[in-house]
Image 1 (cartoon, rainbow, N blue to C red):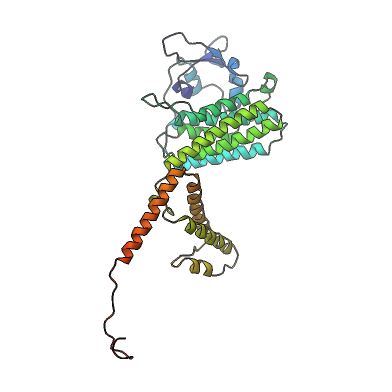
Image 2: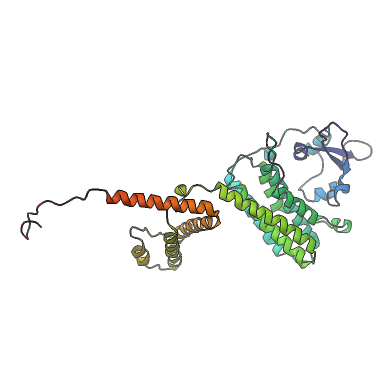
Amino acid sequence: MRRAKACGVLVRARFATGGCDRVVGYSAALRPADGRAPVWFGGGKLAADLTLPQLRQQWDDVDGQGPALAEWRRSPEAAGLAGPGERAAVDVAEWKRAAQLVDAVRERLERTPDGDVAAWRSGCRGAAAMLAALAERVEKPGPDGTGGPGPIAALADRLAWSAQALRAQARVPVPARAEVRAATRIIIAAARQGPAAATWMLVATALVLLAATIQTWHRRHRQHRQAATLSTHADALARELRRRRIAAAPAWSARRYGAFPDAHLKRLSAVLTDDVARLSTPTPAPSRAAILAFPGYRAPATAEEARRRLAAVTEEVDLRAALPAGRAAQEHTERTERAHAQQAQRSSRPKLRGGPSHGRGGRGR
């Protein structure tokens, strides 16, 4: 309720007859911006799975008492103080953990039979919840009025549409997904000021893959309209993520292998691939090929080190392939000019000549 009120939603409780000690339902409304009276909707009017009993099935140990009852008794627009798990925190590891939880949801759905409609609807609902939480953090309007709902929020709306079920299906109890709850809590708690390029994009990419899995399920059920709509919005989000990654990419001079020409990267990738295969054997042989191909090359000591270096080279290759043609050409020109400048600098250095020799062989050796 505190989070809903923070998003501009008014929430009021419906108590059981005879007192204010037991909440049996609720109504919600958007806070009107022009001073008009709000329009209230009961949870069941919004969707069959948004009644209070259905929501409580998705939560752990909820009885509507204690702090929850105190929050219900507040006015529809007033929210209490945030709890310990609701305060914002910046932690890159938590974003990675959230991405792993999203992958766990996707893998579980892939093992779910197509006929278990209730479980698939629950997966759609969880994906919509995680995307909505991410949109609240990433696509929140700025103080100057810029920004606002974008492809993340649009995909969340489409998944929420896919989660809608008939009332008979909505009565089927579905166990709550612990991964969905944990990932949603992480996304909600993560501050918007966190490092964008390497954090929330991991979660967004995992959610695009989850949406693709749900889209496949719709297609197998011959629900082509839902599948086509999900495909359109998932592709739009994937394009936006690609654009943001390219925009956030550092200059080639700041990347680990950015100064290497394309041909050098290709050879280095082949050498590191051989190193991974060589070090993965029980008794690895010396890396003579790498030493001959790259003078001064330090062969990795372990297969894990070789994989990390190969991943860095692959990331650089993939980034160059995804860069717009203009920026890629500019980087290539800058690398070439720097290489020519270094070559000219080496050529202009005075060559040291040795003095007369006093050893065997006579004068002049």
